[in-house]
Image 1 (cartoon, rainbow, N blue to C red):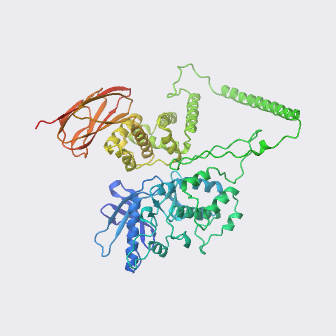
Image 2: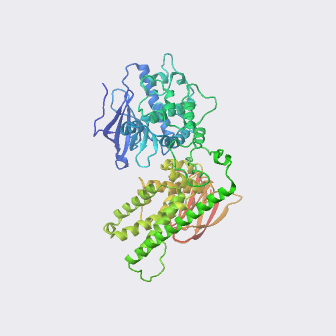
Image 3: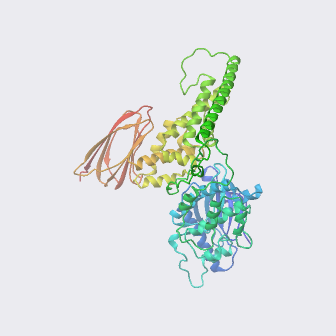
Length: 633
């Protein structure tokens, strides 16, 4: 009998079960609250196979643990990432639990059933361009998913991006195609087939472990979206001839047929190469014909940065340019002259109409009183306010960030400000508009200060938001999360002084703080705000002079031995703070300190971190002096 966890059950003194999400032959899945993270929702997957054969149970248990190990090594904003794996206590048989992120959204199979109609080519092209970078990331990490079905891809409610939620069939490329098995031990493929985990894969592809297997599964998912079928055909075969009846462009139809071919490709097909191919395709839906003598090129599709850089597409021959006009040249000139006269008439009529509307508006509205010239941050009239809004729209268009996402960030920040300042909740409408405008301008200034790579990831919703991801990046520079936190929090307080940086645990603050982390990490990696120093008996002293912009910082790392005496001296205004961190953090030295000198005998050997940040609103000059000496015996 399959045991079910009842709502209200608490596991590991942490995860409070809310309701059951799904039931399979290998595991049960539950929605739970993480009581150690303020009730944040998460998914708890319990391994409880309905199988009496001890060999099958053993192999299934290995698969479950392998899923946890694979998820532990992944970190991507479009993957339901790993949180914890543990063995339950107090049960008669082994009970394993896997905890991962909860993705609020709807599986694509459910979307198909709800809408009752297939996806169009343009929708599917968008889907592929959003999911292929995730598949490419998996393959770069040496992981094959092996079950990219519509049930395992969820369209997230916030940004509408596809997210992978189930890695029960995944396998690492390092494990090889089969892996060692004991005498009579069932293969993982046979176990997965028995439990219905590889229903997308034809028999001749079961032995494959290449990334091409994922691409085939993704091709099947694409076919189902286009045909309106939410499930794999019961016959186990795809009627590829039906592709000819679908309203698809010829290029995209050939693209799908190649992807769904039953024999493995010999062209080393990859997710990155498919992205490059998709960049050359256009949807089959009719597009408006521009009223010009030359065809207008459509703007290129933006491919997420996780894909490899694409070579520029080969320009297609212009059929209009290949035609020769049979009429006389005079006829062409008369046509152009007629078009010009028509254009002038239209422009004159439009100008007259707009002018009349403006005059009528001036007669209805009272004449503005003389006043001081308004500044961009303080609009003094309705016209100034509208001008500022239009300026924001133009800047947002340049960043290619969707307006809905931008408004969500601004409104989210305003809501938090309202909760911190209740007296502004009942502000008049004009004041609320002005407050919104100021917040939007502040946010826009911040977004424009980011590096282009970070702006692009924000625009496409592919920016990693986990602290663990960015900590891994700075660890390669011998910096810890303490140093990264100092740099990011100082910048946050400089941009959003009314919002606590430590409280940004959900959107929109989480995303904006991740953008700060990404930009900060790039500055460190490019040695703009980072330097590896060396103090030796031959050169026991050094100095570094620098200028700190508001909210910005500088990080230094140096390898030192226990028993040496280090002296740190900082010459800077009071608004500049100094931190000195030991290699393990067990020895406390200085943290966010206004002290200007520290000297002591080092208790640990390893890499010491020195972080200097400014809380001033103006640029500040600073100088760091370091000296090293051997301790007296």
